[in-house]
Length: 268
DNA sequence: TGGACAAGTAACGTGTGTTA
DNA sequence: TAACACACGTTACTTGTCCA
Image 1 (cartoon, rainbow, N blue to C red):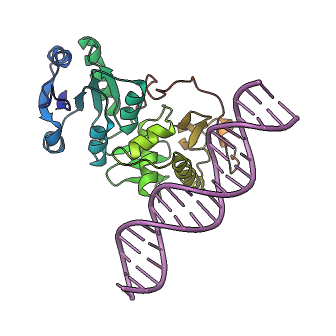
Image 2: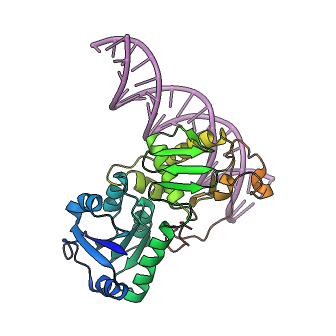
Image 3: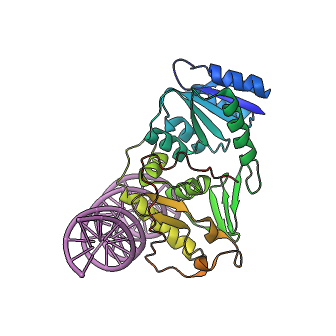
């Protein structure tokens, strides 16, 4: 496994791995390359790696957002010294694959690194394309296709769709979506997310995807993977046409601020 | 069951890019 | 440079859900 270690704190500004990561690397016979956050894009471009590890004092979505905005689909694990549920949710929503404390046992850290790499390189996922049944998301061209028919999404609509697909299986609340879309900009009203999700739904509905997202009342949205399964592979419930103002789900999800963290991850 | 609140949606205003 | 198209955000209204 090839690992690129990115320093995003004063203590590890040049990317030198912390002791926990160093031990995991030595146990796992991992080839290591280090970089500071200034040279991260160049390093990712010139030194293909299997996974990126960002070391931060507190989870900060800006660096993850920058990597994703430059269309690097490399899996990202964040090692952090101090974290809150909200800050972990923000980096996961921005596109990180995992966020772990620096106190984690090196053995578990190594296992997580391997699991993420295995998951991302698995069936249905390539570095540029994610496929879920009839849905194909091309990250290199920022295109979304249903049955090979392109869905004309705007920039923000694509970003929400991409976020939903990459975090499929996880519930995403509106603030997390806004944090991912507007990492370093002033965020609009959360109602904006409702409107953009509604527009995506309308466009997908025209292509026969009736309930692309499940709504959890008061909590957020989740990708409805079954809606994208080919006809005949879906449950009866999903074959029904939803009303125009569909409330796909009203089942309350366990309350809590960090609703994206701690749930099973998405890539199968 | 009804009020409060959240979510869905259409309509509209504004900003920006494109084109003649 | 004006006209136009489009994306985006806001507003207002409707609908659905929760809870006392």
